[in-house]
Image (cartoon, rainbow, N blue to C red; front, top):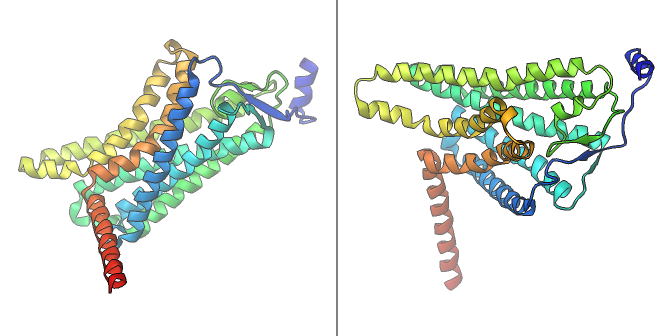
Length: 327
């Protein structure tokens, strides 16, 4: 083994398996009921996010910086759910646990890029609310459509670049010990730990990505709401404070749904059963994309008004068609 590792250190050869085995949900009783639940979650996610994207696209009044970020979040949720859930069901429901080496890396790239963009999108929405409440008179100057598009584009570049580097580093690893990934998808952390040569670059990058994609965004969001709370404390009337804070409730709900399960899992990982940890993380991946459109439709007045307007126009057009046919 020492001779093998020394050879790897000289970049002479790499052991790349033909396939990996995903073993995440094996051994969990009545797990097929969970797969049925995942099917329901996926259908609701696709329908909900498609509706949100369609409403924002059809209503010109919603083509503002805030709703550009909401549109991107719905797009990322739709893309992430479609990348993860169908493949997850194929692996576990139909017992196709073998996944080829290249497919596994591709699966990892798309899942991690979408998960990263979900968090970074929350940062964009947080910045939008921060400027809207702290500098309302300068909001239209500081947060323009062009600025929001540039911000979201830079986040996409960051997420894609970081995840491409992660995948490239995995291709420099040799998997001569085991090909069994104890997760519900091709998890980066589970994969580099299987390597039998030096996985330090992947380990370092994993810690950098956790800070970049989890802790820094969460810190920025919390700090922004401290500033928002301070700004609202200076507002004279309680009614104005409530009206301003109400514009943040949808975003705060999304932050809580995404970060609280992750923080519980990471802070209590030593006390959580591995199966419970896998189910919790899988729910964290599939639940927010389902709830995000529901939260924005129910808690955002502009979208509710737009949905009613679109439905009213459609109903009126149908009535006109019926009248023409009768004549």
